[in-house]
Length: 352
Image (tube, rainbow, N blue to C red; front, side, top):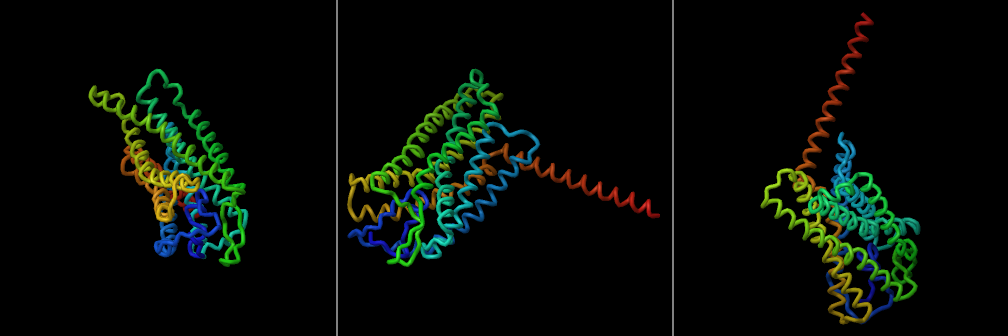
């Protein structure tokens, strides 16, 4: 596809894996859909950012201010909210970039930092779901024999390791992302400048394997076992497991939302890797994958807004926490007001 100022570089590529960074022209004509996409990208990103940041901050505030310590599942879900918040904090820079005709105005350092933040969300969010799936699996399938493994201190260590692992897998974005001047387009583009096609395919293959194939396999195994265990408990009417069941239903809802939002993106990414490895070919397929990359990236980013909504709609325990936090806040406010009135009353008595 010939590169045009309005479509260079592709937002999906620049944000996640750089599949449009090849500046060589091809014989494939550009699709008319690019103009519509590039016009509506900034508005969508801004709305997503405002709504997502407000909702995820609300979730983190509830988890942090609640008087009771977070459970293992809540620690993982809180870290998932933090990962979503990281992504949403980076997206406004891309909204400005797209609105600016893909002329990056923030410099080399921010080019690397913003893209590392986006890439970390891709890896960290899926692995926090892996951890919470394993926790639900252990809680329901092996509640007695492996109960010692489900301790908050282990969850915190697991979360720290997940952040470290996400940062490690984001190193290619840190190394290869750079700002380069393209005088033929009149822009300074923030894009992935891979040294050769082999390194590009290797990095994209790593994205597919570590952010999709491996974690989805683990999640699928745990989910099947969890659903089977829930069916057994429903038949046998285990009242003692009601709390675990409520937490598990929330986790399953979050997992389903993640799969709906992210699976299409990863499928298109795998097809794109095969296309650039010349296993697949054709202008029509190339144009379709380019457009699908755009649309499915937006669908994937929407997941960062859906998660906190699901906590409120599905999570009965979370709604209970919200109610208790507001009660705590009301009591503190009442106590503060009473203290102020008492102080004023004492002061007036002293003056009179």
